[in-house]
Image (cartoon, rainbow, N blue to C red; front, side):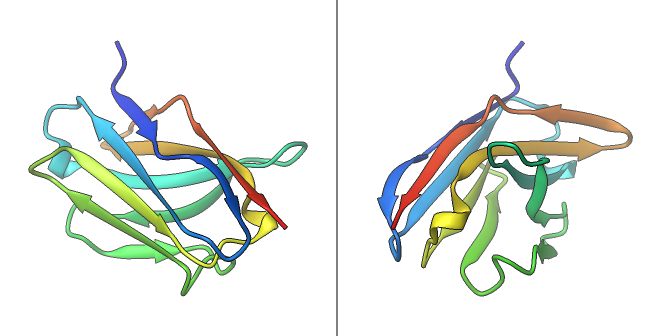
Length: 115
């Protein structure tokens, strides 16, 4: 049962922008803390940004000022707006939902930034 589906990845030049979306079929979506993580080849998965059920946000230092996470509870969707992209942002980006010990992950979407 697919619960999180990411979209919006692709190939972009350095300095460009992309917006990732994560559509959820989870019940009580608004209660979940949502997050975006990424994994580059040969590296561990790392946190990019999170947003709580109350709308508080947190960002990795490497993306602060460039990325913005947001959520639309009416659409059961979380977004990641990525601006001023750099080649080092190249990775597979994963959506995560967390609530009361339950975790769900999407299948990931590839983001490639060319120099």
